[in-house]
Image (cartoon, one colour):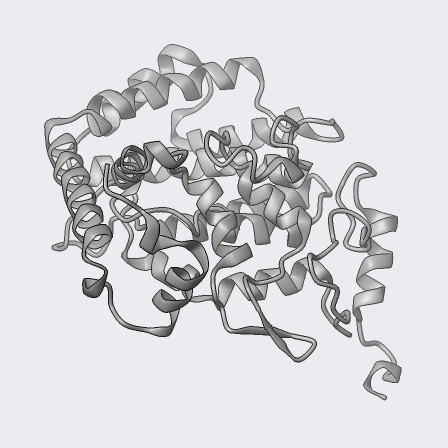
Length: 341
C-alpha cells in the first residue's frame, strides 16, 4: 500500500536509476546473481537496495562500535584530537563515497566496504596485528582483512533471517569481497578462495583501497604535526621536491588527480607523478613518525601486551569473560583447542 504513494523513490527505482546513470563497469545493486548475492537468501527491502542495507548492518554492529577504542597511530589518553580506528573509518567512508559519486560508481557499495574494512583490526594498530600474527603462526597467522570478513561472516550478531538466528550479518558478496581485498590477503588463503583474492576487486573496492591510503596519509600528517613529530616545512619541502602544484591545497590535488586519472577507466589509480609524490610523503611519515623512538616504544609495549594477554587467556580459559558472545566463539571455533606457541 505504501509503495503506491506517488513520488516515493523505492528500491526498484534506485536499481533502475543505477542501470541508466552509473558507469557501465560500476557494480549494480540488482546484480543478485553475483555481487549483490547473499549467502542466505532473504526478502528484498521495499526502500533500500542490498548495498544500502549492508551499510546499516555494519554501522549498527557491535564490531563497528568497538573501533572507537582502537588505536590508529597515536595513543595518548590526554588528547581527544588524535584519530582512532573509528574516526579513520568514518573519514575513509566519507572520502570514498565522494570519489565514487564523481566517478559514477556505486556509492552505497563503496560506503559499505569502507565502513567494514577495518572491523577485524586489533587494538594498538598494526603492532597488535603483528603480535597476533606471530602468536598464531602455527595456525596460519593473522591479518586484519581476513579477520574483518570472519567478523561479518561468522561472529554472532544476534541476527535473524527467515525466523532463525544466523552467524554473521549475511552481507552481500560484493561488500565482503571489497573488505577482504582492501589490502593484500596473506593469511587464510584457502578459506577465502571463493573471493578470488588474486583478482582485483570491483572499481568500488579499488576506490576504498586508495581512499584508505589517502585518509591515513592526510590524518597521520595532521596528527604528526599537532603532536610535534614533524612540521609543515618538512612536509612542504617533500611536496615541492616532487611536484610544482600548490602545497596549500596538496590534499585536494591528490584527490583531483585520482578522479581525473580514473574517470571511465577499468582501474582506479593516480598518475605516475602523483604516485611518486605520495611515496615520498609516506617515507617522511615512516621516518619521522612510525619509526620515531616514541612510537616504536609504544608499539613494542603494545606488542608485548597483546602477546602476554594471548598466552594468559589461551592457557586460562576461565579468565575469559563469561558472556554469550565469548561462549559462542569457544563453542563454534575451537578456541579451547588452541595451544600457546
